[in-house]
Image (cartoon, rainbow, N blue to C red):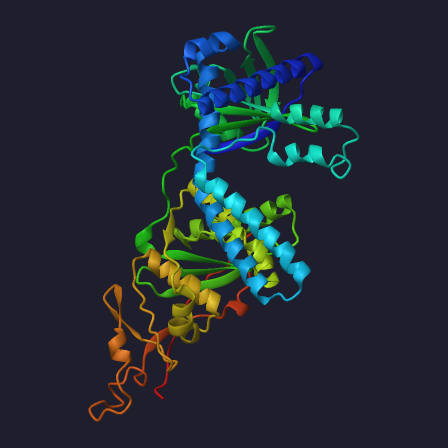
Length: 489
């Protein structure tokens, strides 16, 4: 799915109509949730008649509630593991502490964590707090949260519970959604006709502009794709989010010609390109400074970096290989991690980088391959860093590119500091097995000619990453290889 947003300019009458729609949608959402928690059978015709809803509006309410409940169910195991780690950390602090007052407060903290853990483990159904739990608890500390009175908090609380509504689309309906019909007027302009519940007004019509995604939405309307809409009210007014299926783009990358490996690090991204035989073609680093950046600044930095990578892959005509990582559990443990780990994980926006890269690559027709990142840095340091004159991170990106081509690189756990060599056989690389590199040093049958650590190996010498220059907004240059034979030691 692809989602685009825009700000809506409304007159007072239309804004009041959308406020009433949001109030009705929020009331229907809470009523449906209450009936589910009570265990009562829900009759769709009776529910629609009671709130004067259409069948599609009821389906939108049910779809929204299902999404909220499913997200809580998926997050429950992560939250349980997080609470277990926190209780263990508090127990270790109690064992090390000697002051009675500090021990007392730590025990109170542990009791609170155990209560939350028991509530999560015993809850059979997800618990929802419409309007956010943070805003609900703000009523107990009005002054600290900027409220002059409880009545002011109550108005804010009601506004938060009615600040959005969802319009579900379908591909067999007019313009992909009968509840909100979008008409393309040309360029980035669209006409919108939103259907209400019919109590006061039947429709609300207005004109909008999409700064991004207008071509995608216009193509979705031509192809009769389903388009769903979400309206959200903030301090500046109403915004509209349009979501539709990603259009099929013909692939331009050719996996048989090589791969582009991408290794994401704190502060920069390492990129290495390989040819069809898995040999290094080019390597370079791109800056990715996200520490102390706001959310919008981080999005801009990530988008610029991804643009460079996708442009390079399009120019090379090769797919992109990235590591498959999940930092959800790591970030859940920030409260008891070291300050250095907290800074690193907070600025390590892997998920945002991955989403942006996959979206941009799909629009450009470049395939994105997710590979296992296990031991990529160690293999790069052991086998390729010294051989090609690369840093550890550039060598790790090179290993990821080779994994995208299904080339196997074995990590040899040895304290002797020597790397397993490779030999070229046709179009593939064959790695020397670990047992061949772990032979005893004192062997009468081994000669210097047969020693893989002493034999002369032909390799392609590439320019160092520090010597490469990347033009802003352009594609890094690719230089012709210079072949050199390493002298035997």
